[in-house]
Length: 516
Image (cartoon, rainbow, N blue to C red; front, side, top):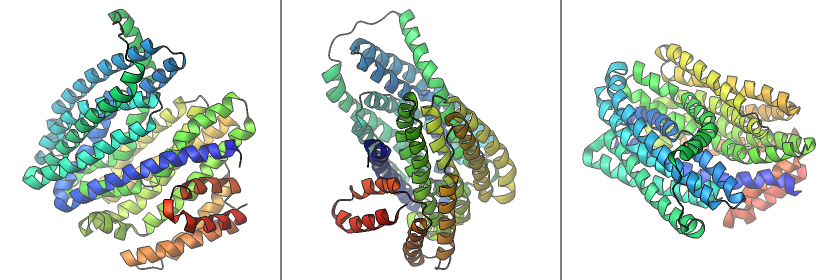
């Protein structure tokens, strides 16, 4: 296998493994809170999440990616003074925006909690969201610096610290009686610890090593030029980020408006499970952007075609069977992770996981469009999808309850997927591997029918999952839907499985033998 063919796989798997660890931490956090709080109390926590996510994204203004871009750019020409200035100016900018966002959140919390939702019990938790924003923004800025210095493990450590301390503080505060307010305060304290840990890593491994000189402050007028430079890059990023939040969380907002609080708890947990297929898509999309950009800059049409085909097949081969498994066994999965009190969200989960598969395909197309120098189209597509989701959620939730929210998101995600696939074909001149994807979809449908035979219980889920996976793999190989270069992606995962590698390797050889 050539370096080019394995480049996408190896980069994706490194990011994938870190994402799995962090996702697991998120499930542990939600699982514990679901069990120590009532469904109504946990529903309040769920209602605050869209505002946490939106305010953090808006307050950061897309600045962390801009920090990463310009830090790496000026480092390449050994301009440490400008690197220092980018970091200092970006920090000032983000702190100002964070304070502004916190004030806005405090002001709008009462009109939302009481005026729109008619839920006074949500007022204090919403106001406490204001505390989260400044800490989260500072942590985000430091992570942007780490990315610019290619300290990817430091980003993981920062997020890991955040998760561990969020879990500890949130659980302790809920146990002593702070309920939803305790969970939100715990999140703020988790971000505070992430800031402290991130700053320690920044000082030890970046500031003391690379930026230890004394740098003079630049005039205010010159600093405004730097601010404009940062904003020019960051504005499309923040618009895209907020639009993604509208895709994920619009349903939760309207559930707060139309339904009792407990339904927000059902939907919040269903949404967290439905996003599992996005783990693979996010890892592949992160790696495919620079790979696509490189192939395009070299005018290497064959390599570009290979990356596009690989990306769609990797994502569909892995995300689709996971989505089907969740769709079929939604009840035992929710019961196992969060307790039987949350199984009323099972139908919504079965619908929503379909939408998240569509969204995973959109993510791949979006990253490739960006790599080809067309970042605007994915942003426009997201805006269209967000509008569709808002309108559909407003109409469908009063009729179909939380299932209406899932339907609205699924419709929006399908539109996103279709628009981006069409645009990618147009700008790249490379056709999507529709026949390969069709074969994989047929194999997944048969897998789903086989799993429906088994009982809707935890034991049935385990046995059905094993049998369904074997059926799916056999069919994919029989249909020649898996290529030999696709096996590289799986091989990179197997190589990092430690002691069980020796048991998985023979299976890998068998798969490679029968792959097309």
